[in-house]
Amino acid sequence: MAQNSLRHSSTNLSPFPCVLGYQPFLVPWHQSQTEVPAVDDWFRRAEETWEAGRVHLQQAVRLQKENADRHRSEAPVFALGDRVWLSTRNQPLRLPCWKLGPRFVGPFKVLRRVNKVCYRLQLPPDYCINPSFHVSFLRPVNIGKQVSSARDCRYAESSFAGGAGDRTDTAVALMPLLLQSCHLIHQQHGRKMRVSYSRESCGVGV
Image (cartoon, rainbow, N blue to C red; front, side, top):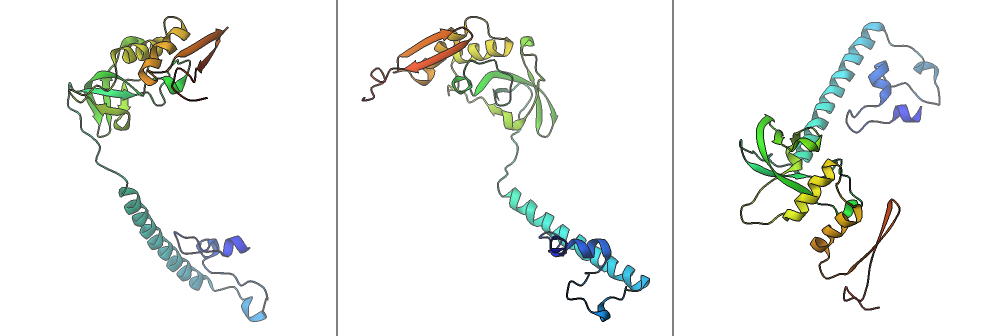
């Protein structure tokens, strides 16, 4: 009863008026308050209540849209033949350690624009994924700025294709990109890989 009597922030009405067309009286109960409203009166009140709820919902939608649009920007537009980087977020990469994997792979050529926020890329046939991506997964290639090294891209391509070669070797190949001054001590035990770093080689005091 208490929950059904509370007003919703969007409709500014409680569930009782929306369903019954009027707000039932709570305890203490009085004889003068037990009369059921007439049918015509109930219809009139119900229509007024539903119209008020619709107006309040429209105002809530408008305010929520204005709030969300403050944090949004126009989607980037790519032309046919542009080269873009593809984010590895939510992509089926076969990596021994996800944190050491590349954030972007590519670059890939844009084949066509599917809609305002989706583009189809020219991917290698061994990627085995849908070539259409949302613009939030794409970054334009800046000429003269090195975003990802060739070794990083080769490792990412092998990860999409299933990862050729030893898993420890591929992980070690990525480490100079992240920790060039640290000495990597790697040990492989069966299918699990254990990676540790020596504090002396990284220049960190004990």
